[in-house]
Image 1 (cartoon, rainbow, N blue to C red):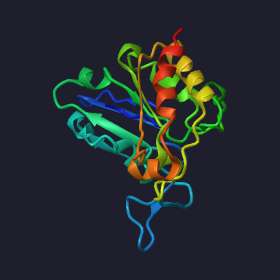
Image 2: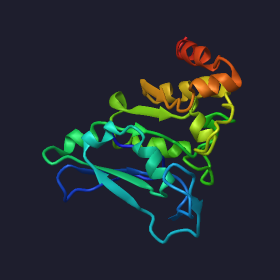
Image 3: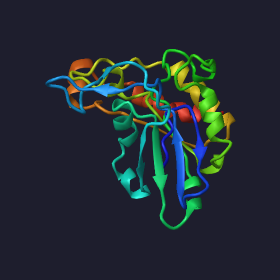
Length: 211
């Protein structure tokens, strides 16, 4: 129930049940112009002096499944999860969602310090969170993300070879739970671009990546 998008990792000892996982991408502040809302892409302004900018949630708050996406759009770097009774209930689970990574090249090739949501961010998280319960939340099929959260949706830039490589990268780290957003792959999308054949390749890829 912790989302990562990104850089960081910090565990706090003095507060029961409090763990922080973060790194949503470049440091930024958010401003909404007239007519903009949380559903439109915010303008980025000068870099903030604060590396950690976030919100504290309880596990039940993640029934709102797009919390990581909302936080990224708001320019936040951190989602913190608080459990009032059990610190271990928080740190037992990691959901890693690298929203700012590139999708035209394999994630394994994105390890440089200049790369947003670079692979080392995941490795740092895995030094704290158990691999056997870690889950990756990806954006391979997220038409809203590639459309910069503006309608109408753009055609999904699907790269099957990148997807297969990414699965192998995650599997090599002991991760066995992988999902992806598929937002805006809807009736309007099918009407505009035809049947989403990438769904078949996506499902089949999970088998190919481990054979």
